[in-house]
Image (cartoon, rainbow over the protein chains, first blue to last red):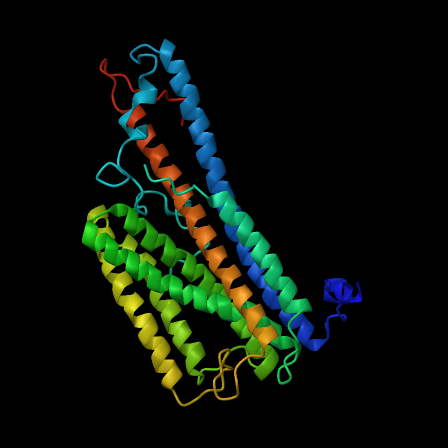
Length: 112
Length: 242
């Protein structure tokens, strides 16, 4: 039992947070901040995708009553064909060009 | 369709668990270094970050080779995201390294230390990847030239690493020192767990970004398809949907 307790973090001696402690804390905090900033940017991007997808889905649902747009046609577009190969001219996975709104594609990195 | 998101949840959970374990080991299990004391704890963060960042740059080069061989734009995306993630990790390496240098040497940066300067050179070289890439408008050429860059720079990384190891000045501490017997068991275990955690983090974030990029690409294609002129000449995206 004592051996088990000694293996737990609560059994460890207090961390020496003296002069060196602030540097160690600083290094780990910098890493954490970078990670959080990156994740926040990615979360914003995912939210934007989700919002746009909702809008398009709403539009596609309305399409059944929209003149000039047959009911389920929007769901059968080539762009969302799940059987399409992942590569090729129609597959837009390459990083964006200069006209594609860079802020949406490269996050948290200085562009030199 | 390639599913970049498959297994992302499992990978994320494994990453969080391994990182928690690595932190616990670093602060509560690994003994204090006799020479450096508590400051040495930075190395359980700094060194794995550096190793993973450099391996990520090399991986970017390998993906670029696959892209040039196959012409598959998927590999270009892999290469781009690998380099992107490694540049972010590189920022963390430089900052945590500077913090360690200040605590240990009393200076934020030392210009006559080959390890520091060589990493800075590699980092700055990859920082030019973005303006180089986006200076080319044509998508095909952009991807091809970026791949050539990634291969050349990726080959430079191990050469640079070996050159630094052969350099005379070895003020920079070596984690895998061989002359004095290397790391003690507890420190080595902690370091290896930290390295695994950082590798998992890199993989998870790369996968996450590829998934987001793929979703964004699919969305663009869908929007383009919906925006195509309908047979009666009206736009298929209503003006209010923007």
